[in-house]
Amino acid sequence: MALTGLQIFKLMPKTNCKECGHPTCLAFSMALASSKIALDACPYVSDEAREALGMASAPPVAKIVFGAGDKMRETGDEVVLFRHDKQFFHPTCLAITIDDDLNDDDFDARLSEINSLSFERVGEKVAIDAVALVNKSGRPDVFAKRAGQIASAAFAPLLVSDSPEALAKALEACAAEKPLLCGANEGNWKAVAELANERDCPLVVSADSLDGLSDLAEKVGGVTKNIVLGVRSAAPVQKLAELTQIRRQAIRRKTRFLGYPSFVPVCGKDLYDQAAEASIYISKYAGIVMLDITDKAALLPLCALRQNLFSDPQKPAQVEPGIFSIGEADEKSPVYITTNFSLTYYTVESELSSARIPCWLIAAPTDGTSVLTAWAAGKFVADKIAELIEELKLSEKFPHKTMVIPGYVAMLKAGIEEKSGWKVMIGPNEAAGIPAFAKANFGNA
Image (tube, rainbow, N blue to C red; front, top):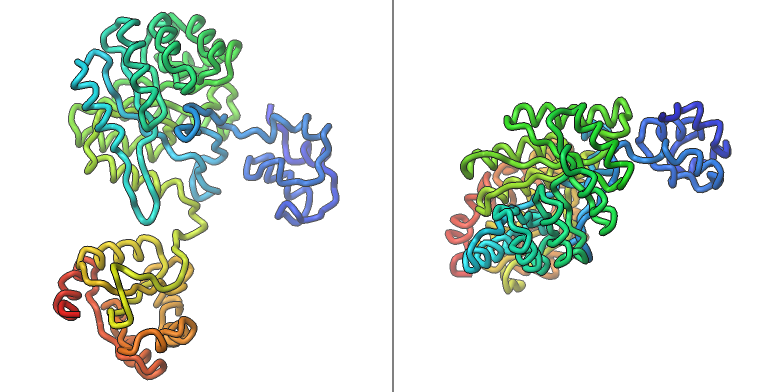
């Protein structure tokens, strides 16, 4: 049973050193009891207290690792029910299926397509996380052959089969890759759990109800603690309810055998249904989502949704302030300015790149806020921009002394010109208008 804040406080060093970020040891104890901080944040806790507090300091949702080397992925290790309470730490893993009964050419083509599912968004690489091999053939030998092929894939492997024999054969081909085994149920759990424990691989356990799932996780927990909870209801609304209940029971009630990350397959019939269904599970606590689709236009929005949800809500996404060249820019190239909010900066940068006219882009220091937000907060105003021009010594670098500002802050033109001596051009309101603006004004630059 989880300890209360006062019970934890009795084991604390009571130095009130503040090195943990809390004003007193009591405040730290209360935060630890509510899983808002890790025990390691206290530098003076004794070994005896650390051992006694092991359960209290453990995250209510256990961390599970699958895959090896660069393909290793982590899921779980979450401590809050709502993102704004702290943040979500381990992004939902996206796994794409591949059936083992495909002919060789189709299998190779499908695997190659899966390997290409990575993207770049706002300066970060985003991608799927795993390839899920499904034992559609029902044959252990075919499953094992295909498992050897996905061992060299770009992503972590999942082995999906209800057959202990098929899983055992497949593990002979890819055990070193530490695949996630998807196949423990009420009928085969003992054999599959022993196999997972022997090979030190995590295991998905599934049942027909949450009570059944908790009971099965308790049984499997006697063999291996490397557990992922499988949600296998048919209807998305029921899966959503179960995912929410699992997280709520783990966080609020500290229900031990529901304190694991969850695995949910998407069952939509077409691309749009699958994308919409997956977005629900990403938003509501799924640790791993398994899909059939490989369409990049559908997967990129899912990756973007995940990227946004698993960012720190207390830290705006921002780029380093400064001036950056786009193309082979020189001192005669036009100069644009925007804020250092990542989404704004990379949207503008992308449109400037598509115009194919070399230029410079200034990311003004606005604490990661958008143009209008920064203007309203007094962070993107004439005084600040004039100071930035001086700080970056732009007058020495660009004899033309001309700058393009976003159209939404056109009212800054006169102030910037007066305070800096630079000429100001008013750009379009929306980033989509940048290529036409650039070609109309700098096409011969």
